[in-house]
Image 1 (cartoon, helix red, strand yellow):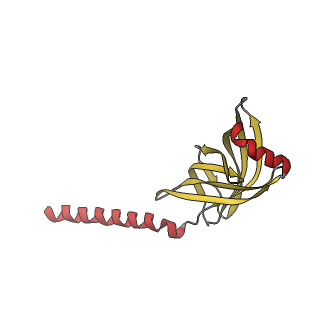
Image 2: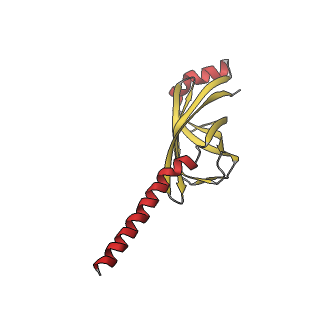
Image 3: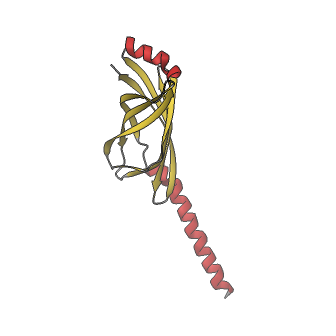
Length: 155
């Protein structure tokens, strides 16, 4: 009886160890997705707030679909933070493909004043998007930090 319980306990411990090992190896198997800003739409919400809608291309370099459980981000124009946002709904990014998503950002007009002036004068601006994405897998969830920089023409 005691030997049977010890055998079952060892079996459970072994299975848990294998599961932990597989989750830790996930970073070796799963490549991080990349993000590129393709466009920005402005929608005034009030006299002080504006809603920005970002068109982002998400590139999945993996041979399997990625399911985003959550997606948090902060947006910078000309190295100035203009706002942040969060997508709560799950997103599926197909394997070896690029998918366009729309990500809302709420910002204050006062935070955009320098950037709006730059858009009117220059048009072509450096941007940065930084944040974290939580990817749901069969072995649990994995969080990836990300940052993407580039230039965008907003004229």
